[in-house]
Image 1 (cartoon, rainbow over the protein chains, first blue to last red):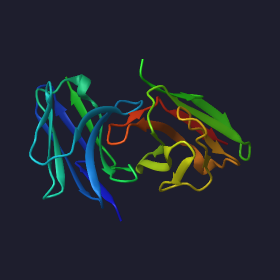
Image 2: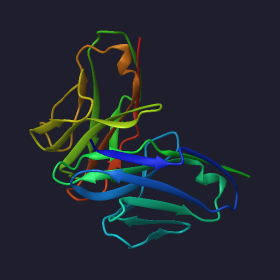
Image 3: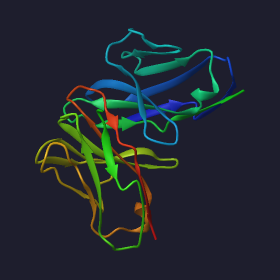
Image 4: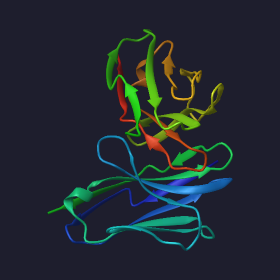
Length: 111
Length: 111
């Protein structure tokens, strides 16, 4: 059975802290891994990762994929209160294009 | 503006009263899908469509129907809604091998 597991499930930090969110997966026919941010509305796209070892960056956010060990991490440096959200990891299965989601990590950034 | 739209955004209905939630995208995406999001269970796929007239079941298709008569539209039909279908519903679309764009969500309550 396909499985995507995110950890931790929730995290509370102070502004300025650096956080690392984890996503491990066991999915047949892996095509890519996606990270989304969800703030009480629709998930918004952050990163798509298809190749191992290549870091994707966008401002204070970065992500990397390890296809051998079947995991990905999302790093957020110098966190701000606006980073408070649920971060979702999803794996895309090739062929069907089906998305398998993890349950998400709820990040709370306190001032 | 490239987007996925859903209607209605909020709906309260009663058990057994047929309803349709519409989904439309203006990006000429081949792939469209429906998800429901429930606390503690995350996002789960209901149905997906690889192209016009091609649809298939996701993980939780029971009680739902879909159709894909035009590329841009992918309505979700609940023939006889029940309280366990109370949920937050998202439609999403993508190009093949692309990222997934989510609609704004439809919050459905079945009494």
